[in-house]
Length: 630
Image (cartoon, rainbow, N blue to C red; front, side, top):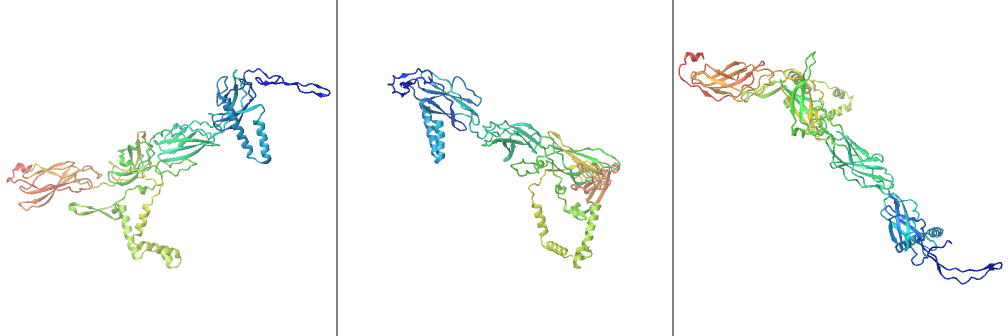
């Protein structure tokens, strides 16, 4: 019993009595046991592994007669969601498997040969006990095409001329070497809001080592923000971004064995657009009797270009509550949109925390003075000169408050020059009390005496720019049809395709100027229907009556350039009512005249317009009585 199938054997016998064993008999003839398919191979084992392959070794019986020995082996692999099957597998010849086995033995010998002394002997003993067996040859085969981080089992079956033997038991489950995670798929859009985006992605295959986290890159223009996330965060919410802006992302995962490749860059995701931000308080920069000019800082458009400005006005009356009323609808031009940017500049991006944007509207820290257009230099004096008739300059008094301030400034100047005004710090310096104050005063005086020092300092201060300074877009708009000498306040809202913004805080109360004299007429009057003693004068009313009082009449001033009776001079005809044509009568025949016209309201006469061309009246003799009446 316990003989190998298909193996040649010889037998011999000896007898034993109480005196001891006798001599062996001559050997019998060679007898070969019957053989069938190869016997079941003992359980193979894994001698080496990597992330994508395993080296499997097993023993195979060698003392076999021709035909009974194994000619080839069939190898099956189970794992990574596949199981053993009765059919199929990888076939390797006996010769190839034996060659690979010899390579394994050679490598093992080199392993213990690198040791010395006792450790070498111990290692040699271990290797010989595992890889050497009498009457058996070591076979080996490398299974390829495996996936990292999966557990696999391998089993082997031998085949001879009879057929395939039984399958061996599978190797003990062996894990391939883990590596960095698989390349993730591009992130996809989860939720889009006006100021935020949320993206998510499928966790990639971890390759045998648990994913410890992710790196997500937010790509905006040429900038890349890096954010580190935990293993449970396969989503990311980008906040404080601009409505209507485009963003893309890419992601990579990491575990204990490394970092994966970046995913492909996702498609561009756009945040939603919204109604514009609430404007800041407008500023009234100047007024006239019927208009007020507002300096408006355009708010952030929330991703949709601003299309217009809505203005409401309110008259301030004592002990009355007046509701808001419509004042103007003003379209926004492309030049106004490009005049600045209400968005603050981005801060430096940190690799550990997402970049945050400042508030989208103009901060309250921006002084209103910086947004006011430059004033006329003449406001510093007590009077403002304007060109008068005939090229002369006539003085126009300013308002009462400005004139009083100018007078106080004029009175203070002689006091300073003459030394009449006392300076406490200067007096203290004379007494020897405060030396530091005296030195500071002398340094200030030297700085004032140096030519251009103050101007240079102001210029340098003006030219310094803060990198985070907001440069908002703005618009200056005039609100017409106001009542003269009346308190008003205004508020604005801006529009885009999504609708109107919230109303801004109202302006500080401002009063329109008192009524003024009418403006100069538009164009040159015309003389028509010239008769011997009369002419028809027509003119155009002022294009827009901004005086604050209605026009109630006109003055026609005629200048006689030539008169046969020596009546040269200037004569004025008063016209009542808002008319634009009048016949001037009782003129001298044959005289040469020219006229110009001025408008009149409750304040007085405005500036006369330009003179007409000189006209000579025909001379036909003594006028009739009917003509005199006319």
